[in-house]
Length: 290
Picture 1 (cartoon, one colour):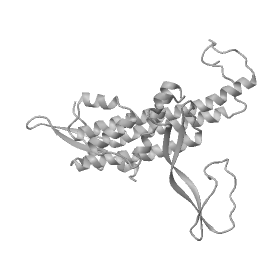
Picture 2 (cartoon, rainbow, N blue to C red):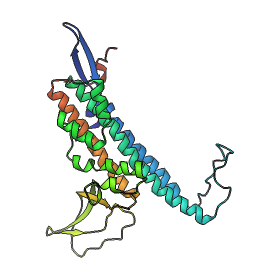
Picture 3 (spheres, rainbow, N blue to C red):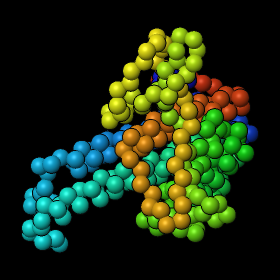
Picture 4 (cartoon, rainbow, N blue to C red):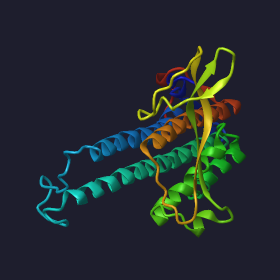
């Protein structure tokens, strides 16, 4: 896995304009990478603030007294009503975090595709617009087909966009348009699973130590605790509401961060394969003319 400093090294590209003129461009893959990371961090922060607020028993002020005197909601409601609102808010804020992740990752893919198009001398406004109009799953396929830019978990990552579409167009209620020829709408990602391996090499199922609500684990024989990188999946049938919990979205955000690193590394590799110079210091690079 490349270091953050390695991802931030810009690439200098010399583009021939006429017979003797050259235009120097700087492609900063670090900034492209940050597009994805900022979306992931925003989703994590906002989910944390929202979920913690929803879980606070003493938080019951839903009126915007410091912002407006205009009222949409009644001045007073029952404690049971507020409790219901907060439960729905908890669900809503996690769903919004997932949408933030996917929408930001789409922009990241757009900028990565644009950079690769410049490197390959194939960039035009029309081609870029066509790519930007694609969904995230089709972006993943196209950038791989054209530039061999990909990550190890393209198939997992491609399941994100249909889930996002269900949130956007059907409020998260799975319908026929989500299923197409499949019986279920599937969301897949990679996560860490805690495992216990006995001194004789046998793996045992144990509670998830990354879940604060997991029960304690007791063993009668010595062994080793460890983490295993495994595939996770949620399946949604027609009529199901898509409901992700904070732990699942946290795992998804971490997984997306690793995918962003791989995509950036793959993009840098594509540029280097094309003979583009990798500068060690930003001060050495020449900004684009005009």
